[in-house]
Image 1 (cartoon, rainbow, N blue to C red):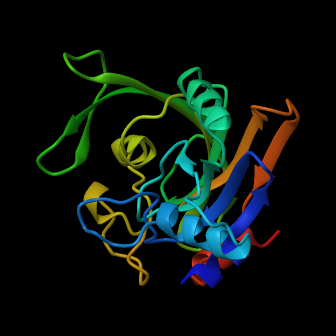
Image 2: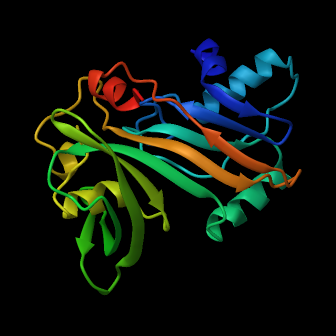
Image 3: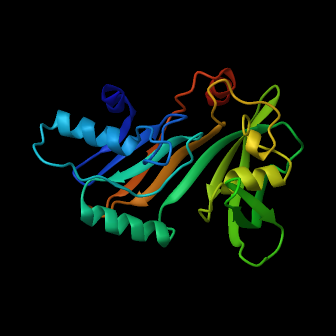
Amino acid sequence: MTHDIASQIIYEDNHLLIINKKVGQLVQGDKTGDASLLELIKAFIKKRDEKPGNVFLGLVHRIDRPTSGLVIYAKTSKALSRLTQMVKNREIEKTYWAIVAKEMLPQSQRLVHYLKKNEKNNKAIVFPKPTDGAKEAILSYHLIKVLDNYQLLEIDLETGRHHQIRAQLSKIGVPIKGDLKYGSPRSNPDGGISLHARRLQFVHPVTKEKMDITAPVLSNDAVWRAAEEK
């Protein structure tokens, strides 16, 4: 498994490693006990760099298992603490691509909702106005391509709530392709959903260099391929 990791690394230096996660990969261990990217990357680095001791690797932020795209891991504790703080301060700009149902939508829109997590079914409940226990969720989308049966949205996240993009798009009547949990009529063949963490922009926590990282979609799905064509 670890040999696949090399092809998924989009950026790496002494302080951080950015990977292009495939649909179905776990960013860190959970109750399923399945191997996570955190463990796989550690094993990969240990072997590649012939490290005798433990490899330090810290997860900076998460994306859902059925989602693909960019995830940042920190290779030093200094980078981890700084990046964690940057996530809290919303200093990491995240852009997603989503393939959604073909419905009439404004070309661009800023969505403001209030989300509450239902622990029982691991789902976000969406409210139109402030509600007890619900957190404000904000995103902006821009329609970038219309396909035969779907459309491609580019999404900029202003907040990072549980299932935020999935829940908010479902609320306005355009569930993400393959997302049965939020109202898509059919599943995707790979069991994932057509949501991809496309781009990250931030200032490097140590070198202070401006980082702008983009990840291609790794799926063989014909709709994704059509969406990615210029």
